[in-house]
Image 1: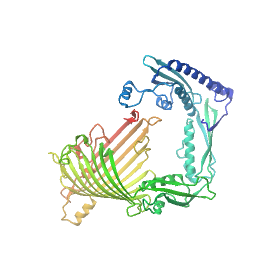
Image 2: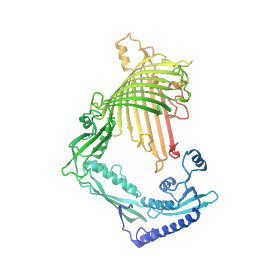
Image 3: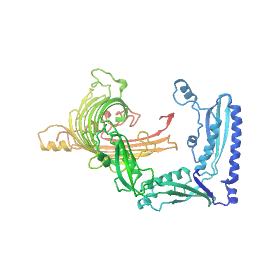
Image 4: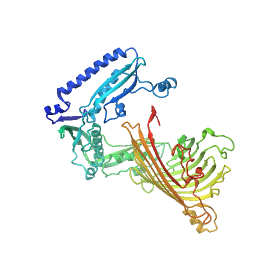
Length: 619
């Protein structure tokens, strides 16, 4: 049902034309031409007489008779849009906020009607009719558009056949039936056919056929009982020759910027000589090279024409980044469930002592209550300013026993300023990350830190927090991220499980040296977190976002025995704020006496409907 598809009808013409509108031949041509000529004549007369002298805004667009597709789905196809309301037009005229008024254009609207007809036709509604009704309001210089739609019956897919797949592997055949875009019994859709051909082509390119392509799509319509129309979809492919990876070479555009060993590049890619060619591994390998933060560009290319041999060579073209870089940064985030604004400075030393190591030295300042900041000598001791100062030095080893694991060592100092207290933390952290699967990551970290809290109000600190702590904290985190966008997802999900334990190392030291006297925390903690995103329309401008978080922490030991203390403040649960429950300020929600000092249990569920308010601005 697209221009690239060959269509044939195996239905008795006399019987079919009695029950359904025609699909081919002179009757279809005559019916369409009659509608086009009438609409063209109407719009020509209407446009030249009514709109010749003045512009009319589009006040409303309504659809009547549409059952399968919503108004937003149909409106997204049209170039003619509803004009913003009078208030928003006033804002645009005065301060240029929002969108300008939309004026009616008969030529554009004529194209919209044809696009709607084609949209229904491409989605299996072979007999859909689209009629229009336009009313003018000369006093207010506006038009109201009403579009009448008779959808009719849609075509169902009754068979799907793939051709040209004789040389594929067993692994390909297993994946062929996984998550198909076309299913028998579904409504026919040209978009679904296109998605299925792209899926099969991608599977072929991951099964050793780099030059695989689609030949054609043939859709045959036929009458089915009781009184419906079925579609037989035949997809033809040309896989070409099957290849394995051949020699892989590395080309540096400018190695004077950074002395780099090519073997580091070869160990990061996900394929080697002799492996079956895979387009997915080729793309993932490029992303891995970018993740090293050593290259401005990284591209893996293969010959544009099929080689005669059964192996295909690859060339990795790289453009290096400078070895040293000093970068200022503007910070805007929702860390700690609050809006933070600040700035910082980062120094990067790439390929530090070779092996693609990355040394970074960062200092930054973030403020939450920046509108209340008082820049006096007591800025860290007042009860108004909220923010933090952080200084850290981090060394990253990207290859740790395998190219799926990396190691980080970080030494940092943090001054966390809240209204009731000031927390000073000196931390030494070692962490290992490992990629278990394409979308699944695991993290293991060991934090050794000294934390001290000073109260800034007359209200005393919770018991145990008044003494400095020496803590050792082990954390294992497993996360799976299948969202479609890092910053503004419209589909997919994100799941996280974190298990934490504090007190093992200090407890061993206390047992080995009974006369040592320093407080430390002994506790365990479990956190489960999830986010889900669901598009509510075809254009993904309306998104339902769900979030759930549950956590529990339990102390063990006592304050008197082994000098144990409470759970550290920066490892407790907090609620309220822009990233939590927005009806409360950050760290002000909780069924505890002092929610600003956190709690040991959290259960939080959120549901949001995200949609644009004016233009690209959303709510």
